[in-house]
Each structure stands twice: as structure tokens, then as C-alpha cells.
Length: 121
Image 1 (cartoon, rainbow, N blue to C red):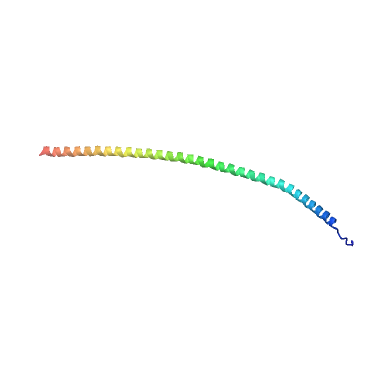
Image 2: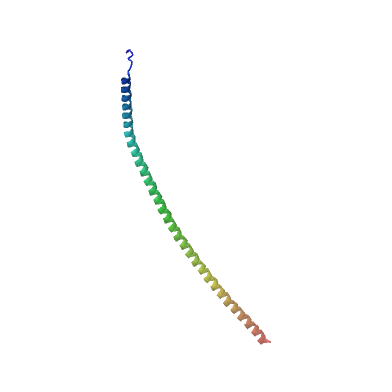
């Protein structure tokens, strides 16, 4: 076993300075590694953010396209409904005219029967 050798103040200062240098070297080595890792992570975060923005823009475009399609479909439905309504109104008008003509014919036939009955008396 080595005999105990007391240290003087200068030895302790040198030991502390060498320990600080070793800690600083270790820290700088770690920092360099961490810097590359953090740069990679930052690049990944930026890529993910760009992808998110691209997906959001794509969703917005899809949303706008769907809105346009919905508007077109609504316009087509309204046009079809208006056309159906006009056709129904025309059919009802035609039925009304036919009913009026039939009523006129009935009245004429009734008047003719009445006139024939009067003529017989």
C-alpha cells in the first residue's frame, strides 16, 4: 500500500484545475453530440410541421371542393324542383281547363234536354 502523502495547496489547485478541464472536455463532447441530435430533431420537427401544413391545406382544398359540389347539387335540386313545380302547375291548369270544358258540355247537354222537354209540352 502506498504511504499517505499529504497534499499542499498547490497540488490541490492543480488537481481541481485538471478536474475542471476534464469536466469541461466531457461537457463539450456531450454538447457536440447533443447539438447534432437536437439539429436532427429540429429538422424532424420542421418536416412534421411542413407535412401538417400540407395536410391542412389539402383538407381545406377538399372542403372547398365539397362546398362547390354541394352548391352545384343544391342548385340542380332547386332547378329540378322548380321544373317539377311548373310541370305540376301546368298539369293542374290543364285539368282545370278540361274540367271547365266538361262542365260547359254538361250544362249544354242539360240545357238541350230542358229545351227538348219544353218543346214537347
